[in-house]
Image (cartoon, rainbow, N blue to C red):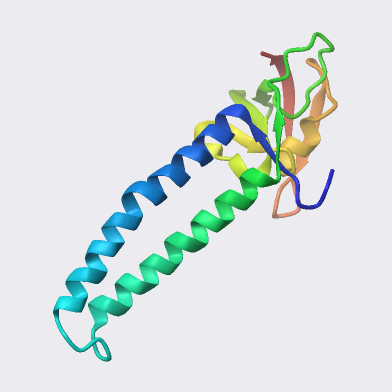
Length: 158
């Protein structure tokens, strides 16, 4: 994998494109209006509203540049729908936390679109890294920050 390469699902790519559109169409207009209003106050040398709006404008432009670069370097990963039974990036995996007997389902994605609250874990996260290459029925021991481990049993791949 190229160092600049960004792994994205098709859904993740669409989310990035939608965010860029929103930034370009809506946020740029909002900030331009804030700048215009701040300029109406007169002297910009001590105008905190103007400074704040210009900083917000710079943040938006940085975010647009970052997103465009991510899209330019994106490699689209397909949902893993092959019959190999092996977990890979794009797989949706159901696991059981053996300590708490709790089942969880995750989709393994590239780090750019990881969002654990939405059930999307990165392929380079401790759990994601340990799941890749495994099959249902196997157990993985995932290191925790405190030096311990958590064991997960792979229930199935959807």
